[in-house]
Length: 168
Image (tube, rainbow, N blue to C red; front, side, top):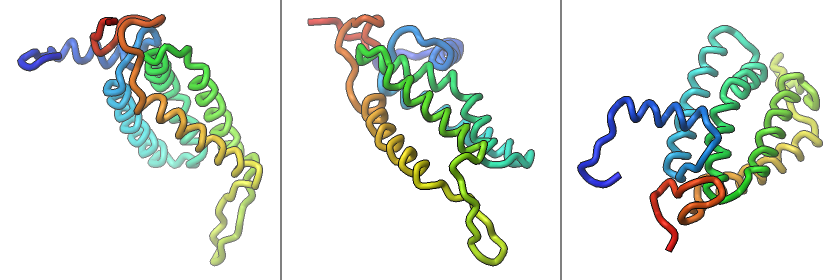
């Protein structure tokens, strides 16, 4: 959009709805970051609401993951498609993240540790810590892919360039 060009409120809402509800096409890094900020805000609000209801933190995290899965899925796939990629790596990240969140909610691989003065805290077992570490490394790779690397210039398999560049 150039200088002096404005977007109506209706167009903005349509763009936001499409951002979070479709997997077709491509989005720019800027739109991906806007989508991520929206998901972070929604995650914080949902977490606060669930904690006020008195839900266990691990189960609240699983509920937030499930509720925000589809919007996250949509922005991640469209961003990978902007790089002319089918998003299999992103699909793996989402699947394994969901599985680890479920494992955490079920208390699998967690030992309750006495911290003294009657305080007992859950601590992940070694194998779970290794999985968390590997997912952290994979998450950094995906952050670079989604948030920092340029998309394919011009049209690609998944549609027109979201920045409007034509092939040279």
